[in-house]
View 1: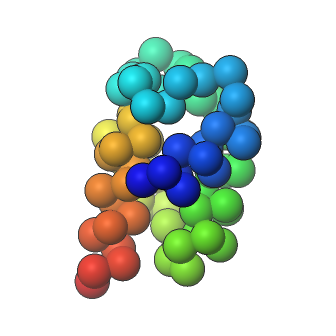
View 2: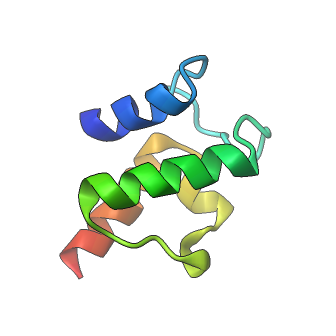
Length: 75
């Protein structure tokens, strides 16, 4: 999870990803942020987040995204 927080913070250093839990619902992240995060996460974790995974509930918080990553790595 620390690596994910670091990745997200490098893209948007102005956001506290450890506490924010409405990144999409409150329009904290825009589509460009999501694309950048997905690209970095795919490279770092060796996974492929696809269009079907681009759901608000997967990106509302770092913990939700980490859960998606964990599920993808374990399947």
